[in-house]
Amino acid sequence: MKFKLIIIIGVFFTLVGCSDDFLNTQPADTISSTQLSSNPAALGAILNGVYANLRSFEIGGTTGHIDYGHRGVLAGLDMMGGDVSQSAFHWYVRFTEYSARIQTSGRTRVIWNTYYTQVAEVNSIINAIGPDTDDASGKAFRGQALALRGFFTFNAARIYAHTYLGHESDLCIPLPTGQSFDGKPRSSVQDVYDQIILDLEEAVVLLEGYTRSTKQEVDLAVAQAVLSTVYLEMGNWSAAADMANAARSTYGIMGTDEYMGGFSDINNTEAMWGADIDSESSTVFASFFSHFDNTNNGYAGALSVHKVVDAALYGEMSDTDVRKALFVDGAGTVNPMADPAGSIQALGLTPYSNIKFRDATFFEGDYIYFRSSELYLVEAEALARMGDANAAQVLFDLVSARDSGYSLSSATGDALVEEIYFQRRVELWGEGRSWYDLKRLKKPLMRDYAGSNHASFGLFNFPAEGNSFRFQIPEDEINANDAISASEQNPL
Image (tube, rainbow, N blue to C red; front, top):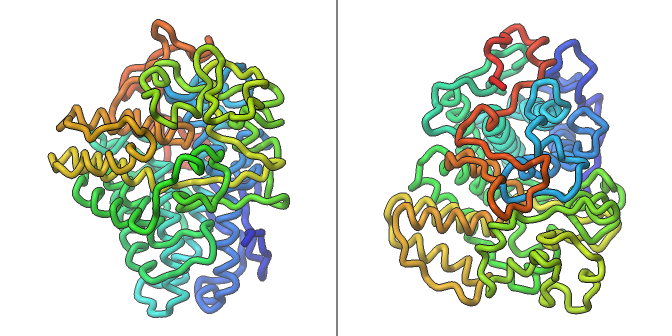
């Protein structure tokens, strides 16, 4: 099923520019909450619109070719970590050089709009359907809306504030709840995370028994997956392990052939949630595969703005690991396992270029937002932090499917946590987790080292938890929102 925007009785989706407030948090509908609650078609239209907006061009309010929804945000954040780089000065360079986080940058505006405008839409559903509903459709609508609000809020909180642990009293983002949140002040990290947990835990209850029609929708497993990552961020190890295990229970692990298949098909064995892109929904050059597929005719391929893996990370990968074959080596040689016909080798890619992301169509490759393999890593880390001996086995269950030479780890404690972190870096490369992990684990950014392959515009290091690890709130929001003073802006 391909989602399209549907106009029903004036229910449509506003971005910015229709209000004096930069943060336009009121859906442009003329239907009251009472009317919405008795109009399943309108509720469905709102939800379908949100799912569509997550992969739409200009959803962040700009015409930039990094403005194509949630996957575009994740790509930008990956460029701010140490594991992903690009070979030329082009799109995403503002993220690489960290100017994207400055309040006057269009990039911070894109992120703010991408998440907050969608919160406004799902709020209209949450406000229309009470928590005590016993209607199956109502539960499904409210459950999805709550899961989405929790997901959007979690992403925004991680971008505009430091990680939860140790920063509970810091300023975070305006709490996106209630009939209206225009002009709200910044809440504390604690208060924001408390609301995220409330939303996601209720969503898990409401979505029990719900069967979705497509992987583009949120279901119980997706809500559990998101909740497990929030628990992990907050240090609730037991809940994180349990929720991750439950979320992955109905999913398998990809075999080698599928793992080498390009990560462009939502029907992938591990794909839990994403966007099913076709000719009608494709955003062509303003798309993830245009930027990250070094073998196609987009920015990465045709213009040779190659997305590459950090040389040090590549050097640590085992030669028996199939994941290493998804990168060109330091001499520019492509592993025959990934390129039996030699067609990729003939392209002359920059050393360390990725061939993980490949789309054989004309920019109709699907987006995968969440894979079940991440949940093995969440569960393993949570167990390791509790000193549970099962942590190494959970890690082995995943990594042994990728690396024929991998043995059950004998590490414990912090050493095992570090081993799991390394496997996260390899497994989730380019999937939008690396910068979040630097923040969550309170690690420094390390790009400038002997033998680094990072381009000159990104060749620098930052200490852990420095000011640069938080985006500034967009200047227009500061100017329009009287509840947020300039003195409360995140420092440069």
